[in-house]
Length: 295
Image (cartoon, rainbow, N blue to C red):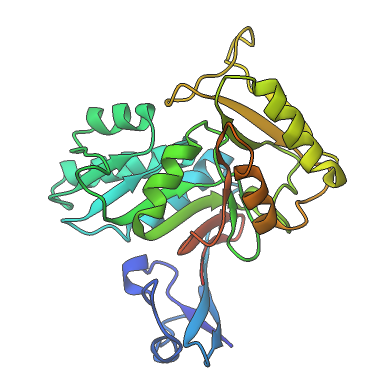
C-alpha cells in the first residue's frame, strides 16, 4: 500500500518510530512529491515504514551532501530535554554539527550528549553541547549514528571509524537508534560490500585471533588484516587501547547471528562490528531523495 506525503514534511510530522499498524493506517497523504509505503504484521501489530522524499532538483549530489541531508533529517527526531547518543564518523559528524547549530539558535535546549568516541566528544565540546557518560546517564532517549553497511532487515556493519565498542554500548542503551546513511551503504547481506567488518581485539597475541577469525569465515573467502594507523607504520589503537582486525569477505556472511556469537566466543576478542536488531530507523539519502525505513 502506498500513500504520498509532503516532500518538505519534517520527520517529526511523520508516524513515530513506534507506530503500530493502526496508527499508520490513519496517516493521510498531503501531496504527491513523496511516497510512503508500509507493510503491517497485524498479528504482532508491528509495521515496516518506508518514506521517500522526492527531490525537486535534478542536480547530482556528492556523497558528503547526501550524508548531510540524511543527518539533518535524523536530527528532526531530536527534542529539547533529550539525552542523546552521539555517533562517530563522517556522517554522524554532520548530525552533531546540526545539533550544535540548533542549540546555538535556541531551538534545542537542555540537551545532554553521550559521545561514542574521543573525537566526537571533542567536536561536541567545540559546539557547546553538554556531555556525559553512561555511568551518569545509563538510559539514552535517542542515538544517531552512521553505518558502513545496512541489509534489508536493517542489520548493520559499523565500526570502520574505529569506535565500534563504545558505539555499541551507547546505542544498546538507547530507547531509539536512528541510523543515517547514503544509498551506497545498502547491501543484500552483511559483508557484501567487500569492505572491512571490524573486530576489536586485545593487543596480546592478536595474530592468533586474526588467524582464528579468518578460519571461522573460510567459506566466505575471508581475509583478516590488522588495521594500521594513518602512516601505516604501526597498529591503529582504539580509544580503549585495543587493536582492530578487519575482516574482508568475498561473499556475504551466511548467518550473521551465528557469526556474531562465534566471534565473541574467541578469548581476546572485545567486540565486533555486527549490529544486529538494534536500529529503530534507517534514513537513506540517495539520488531520488530521502527515505526512512523502520521496523
